[in-house]
Structures are given as structure tokens and as C-alpha cells.
Image (cartoon, rainbow, N blue to C red; front, top):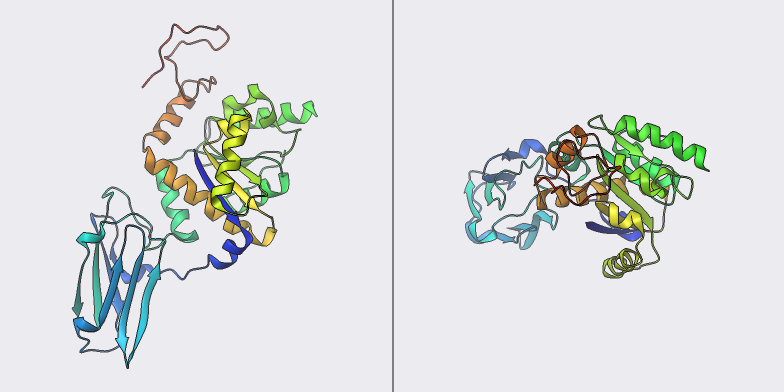
Length: 304
């Protein structure tokens, strides 16, 4: 499970200017080549300052007695090998070659941003759907609208919602917001079989004031056996809610999904297998074809 905490202050300060795609030579090989305009010719290598870490990069140039920042980010799209960073000056451009830790990961941009996540996570999902769940229907719908399309949904409502989930569980590339609160299908233990067809993001408002305390809060909920926390792939904790920041929450959700899938690139394929076998509720230990969920048996070994 991936846990992400987002407070209102973080949302306000999280706006970073991404490099234009035209400034990136190539992003799909083992090397990410970045070209930056120095603004003048004749810049000496002694006037260049570069600090590269696994997920951050600072580039500055000496200009008329002060350091001018060309790039400063702690949100590179992927992890790099800082010790293998190579740079040189080409006329009035600074060329920086960054070695990816994961050569197979395609970088839509140099930095992780809303635009780059929309492109990058779509590639990683490979058609797997996203479900948004938890207390607030409003929040679920707002975030779903940001991601793609909102879905609207007492027992009768839950059954109707389950029918929608059952239909959507066989469709690729869907973003679905579930009904929040006690009336939603997610509150029924036997309705999760269709949610398992996609990646479920559990959106939860929190009283925590920092990431560590939010993680501790989530651990307590897991220990208490709260089903949503144990079944969802991603938990996003919200320190307050303002609809104006729905895109920030959606971005945090995509970022968490990206890191989850990169930790196990077989997950989308496993979700696809789960759907092909009929969404029988045997996630994550998928049983062989012919397994009957109505028959309690430990005889069948899960598929790898």
C-alpha cells in the first residue's frame, strides 16, 4: 500500500514550473538529456554549479557576481544515478545527461507534475481502471472529475452501485468515484470483488498535521481491521478539504499510483488476469480457472 498525505499548505506551495518538452532532447532511453539556455556565450565551466541527487536536481550559473538558478526541483519524474551525471557546455547551452535508475521508465517530462503524471501514469496503468472511495461523495466526485469522468451513484443504492461497478470492472481506462459514507457499495464486504478489478484510492480526511502522523493513523486503522484501508492499494490523507485544491489531491493520487506500480510492474497485468477470470473476489491470491468462490476450499493454490 502507498500512503500519501496532503495538507492545504503543501497544496499551495506545490506549484513548480516544469521544463517545456522542447527543452528535453530525449526521455525514453537510459539517459535523460536536458538542454538549458545559458543566456550568453563564453560561460566557463567554473561558473556552473550542479547538485544532483536521486530525485532532485539544482542547476545554477554565475552571472554578474550572483548565482542565477536555471533549475531547482526535488521532484524529478524518476530516480537517477547522481554519480553518473555528465554535463558540458555547447555554445550558449548547458547540456546535462542524467542516468536513469530504471531505463524502462518513460519520462514525459523532467519533473513530476500534473501534466507529466497524466501521460506517465496512463502508460503504467496499461488500461487498468481507477476507483475512488471513502467518506465524502463530494471529494470522490471532484477528484474523479479531475482524473477523467465523475460517476454518481440505504441498501437499494448500494445494490445499484454494485451493478455499475460490475459493469465497469470489465472496462479499461475508467475512472470511477464511489458513493461515500455508509450507503456506498464499498461498505459492503462482498462488493469489493469488482473494485479489485482496478486500483482503489482511499481518500480520507485526517486530523494528522504531518506525513508521519498520517502514516501512523493509517497503521492504526489497519490494525483495527477497517476494510477500506486493508483493501485499497493507495491511501491519500487530506489535511482539510477545499474544492479549489482538487487537482492537487488528484496529482498526489497519481503520484502515489505511479510509485506503487513502479514497485511492482506486474500489478496491471495481474489486474487484467483477475478480470479475465471473472472478478471472483480472490484478489490478490488469484486462484486457477474453475475455482468456485461459493465453495470454501484451500485446496486450490493461487496463480503466481
